[in-house]
Length: 200
Image 1: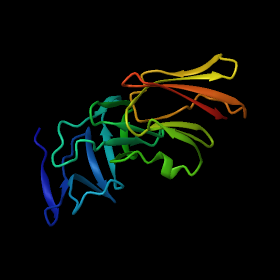
Image 2: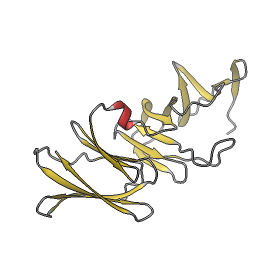
Image 3: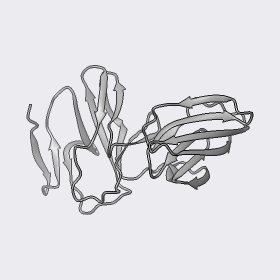
Image 4: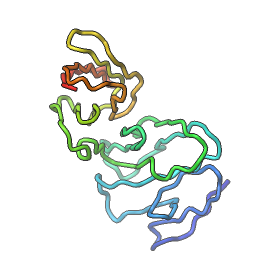
């Protein structure tokens, strides 16, 4: 089915008038957009994404190609439900959704903004890895996607693991706060292994 669009403002925004029961679109206030143009590129800009899902199932975010972008520029989908930034520059971000409309869960970003928005304790940035501790623990990589995270207590016992992370940011949502020392063993997509010590 070919998507129909109409001019919204001076050729930079095109209203999405497709009434398909399953669709993905950009949001500008209450307007569903097929295209949203900008006068200049801002790495701190964010663009809400809406989804209509006729039946429960897997949805995917990916980029076919980028034009007029620096090769190092990353592109993320922020998932508010999981509190993760998921790079879609070289890989898909897939998520299971129930039937329904989701206009306040996903946001397109050009930088992983976790460290700017949480206002919390940051453990040193090493090799592009930052661990942010507040009501939870978030691991963020500024350079390479995270492959796995293993969590050990100070006696060397494994107490948690996060496999197939495939994202730039991961919330360690299964940890219980005990105000004790933990060691995070973080493996990146390039197989580099980084250890971080935290108190949580």
